[in-house]
Image (cartoon, rainbow, N blue to C red):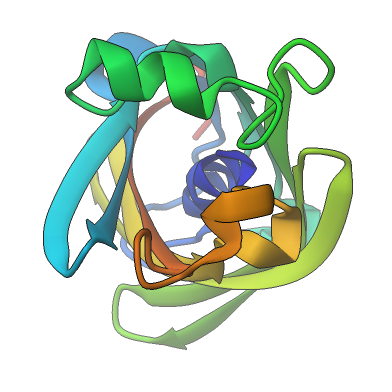
Length: 190
């Protein structure tokens, strides 16, 4: 779940040459989303997190100063099944009572051409923190911008699914994290 935060943060850090001297500091959470996709017994499945917070400071003219953080309430997971939701917040999966949040904290951002960027940072889930790279696109229109991206993590690297759930034939090890973040430039920045 923290991987989702990572994605969201990465999106907030991305610069755009088309935006001139605007600092994007407000995240429109009601218009944003953090979702995930995986395979269960070979069948594609999708889900989302209903509660997450995000902080951003992004001025396309000063990419080196970009910062972002995303915190996801792992207990807000929605797999599409109440039974599955109850299972994945338990000790063998996210252990939400002990580790209630997943987080991504940005460490850097680089342009890779066009509207594409690569964000780097630390993704923390269930007490484990790993470095991740997240490809992101940024598009701006006036004082509003959107960050979209996706990246894949291996759930077992974060101890998501212990015991009998380490069998990747039942639930695949690869989890794709997707994010769509809407950001707004602060007034008065030109």
